[in-house]
Length: 622
Image (cartoon, rainbow, N blue to C red; front, top):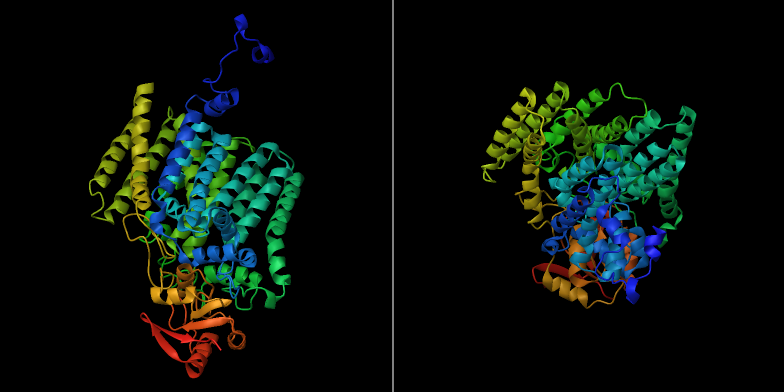
């Protein structure tokens, strides 16, 4: 190689390499020499297509979820608001989640300027990165073809398309969980603690994104390392202890910072009962979500299970969750069982079985928790299942396909195809006016393919190509159609849905743009807070329209004790709040005995109301 690089040009002329690709570029385009020639171009094509799907017409959704968009705007105006995830730049109260996702979005907004695009584009890029990382993780255990299948399935899962084009925290959560799974795969190869420390770090930051939901993958990660790592049991346990320490450190530093920071010098922790981030994690965003109970309205309104349907094993298949995530869920479950059967006699450290335990454990534990959550449960939570489903289809599908010369692997494959064709027909029938012909095409191709696999056909390259093409049509067509439809729609509010249905849900958590006249009035304010209003959603809308800080009295649910009556009246006396706007969305349910009710009564008794547009506004200036 050295001779080739240093060989001089002949006949006194310089070699003209300006039109030839550099060796580094060639290696990038070709990929590793051990890969099939199609692998790297196919991966680049997959990532490019994913980027197009997630970025196309992204600005149609405006600010997406105004609740989080307003917090991003506040973070561009105040570093303290960025650190704590405040809803307003005056730092009265935070959003009801930790600020991990807001840190990323605010960084983009500070660099590129605050806009709907700068708020949403990080989510799309996280989606592309998640597809790439999932491909890399699956490829290391099962080869490039399986990696491409897994990446494509994730990219085209309807709820993934939805959430990677939206600014809820779930996009970053999925990216961090996939990154952690990739590190588990690397740790299984080397049996060293280095990669497990990175696993713990990723999980810790996932906790700072969506709290205890990040921990649902930990049982699968720990199990697969205990079972399959190529080292002694004692070392396996010691390595896992280091990973646990990494989780504690990477999540705990921020919890400690918030708990030790003087409470009167930081915003109130929205959603908590005692201004504590730890209580928020264990209560409202922890056991409150699982067990339900009063006060767990969640960051999207409604009480308990109304948005997710009845609890039970079939919840992921109901009308709320089904079209979001379940297109390939039956196939993934069959693939898991079939793959474990196929590898039943493999050595303890077998990579394929380890991959099945990793992704299967992720899927089963997370799905069971979601299926039995008694608190607020939204269908878009199911995006956390998408990487596991995609990986199982890729890993087990590839192994079963390799063994297709035998009847048993073909039977498992036939089961995957038949289950998918049948279930896709059911899902498509729920939207009778949506591509009515599609369910019949999938059913017909599925029946033919299932029959061919069970009966057996000549094992030639041409036959294999036909079967693979048919399998792709059956397994991917229904979900892909919903995915493309999802990308073509605008989504707003805080309870978005995929497919041909409405892109937003109203009620608490729906979009609240507020009165234009009120926003114009607030834009002239120079006070610390231009106004106060009951509830976070209306406050967020006014902030986005006026560019000014607005106090959300009572936080998301209207029941947070922030600000207290004493704090509010002191701020008014100090000239820190100019106006009080009557009404509000997503709040004000505290009643007359709550801070919100007491404040409203005091304002009405001591200040004069005026009408601005269609809103009642009190001037609080001294």
